[in-house]
Image 1 (tube, rainbow, N blue to C red):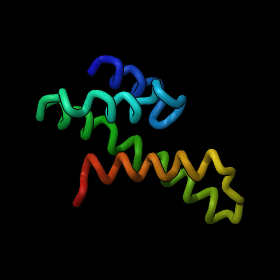
Image 2: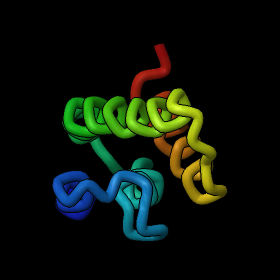
Image 3: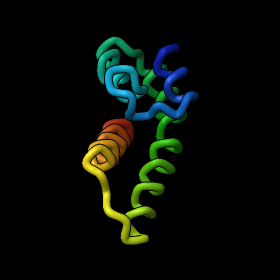
Image 4: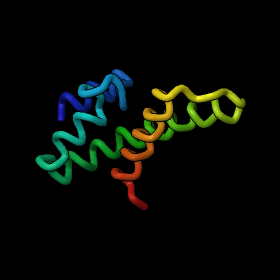
Length: 86
């Protein structure tokens, strides 16, 4: 849990690969308690929403996405959907 929180605090939501908050979350999710999952949800969702909006704003300004940005955007929304399926 501490590693996930450190990555979230550092803004490493979905990159770098294998040490991002998202990758750590996926790795440790089976062993996390409901309370820990709720804590991650409360901390991560606002940051994921902001990060997703930044990418979408870039697209709205008619900028093209790099392939790496597309992967990041997909990971951001994949994680958000996992945290809050509704």
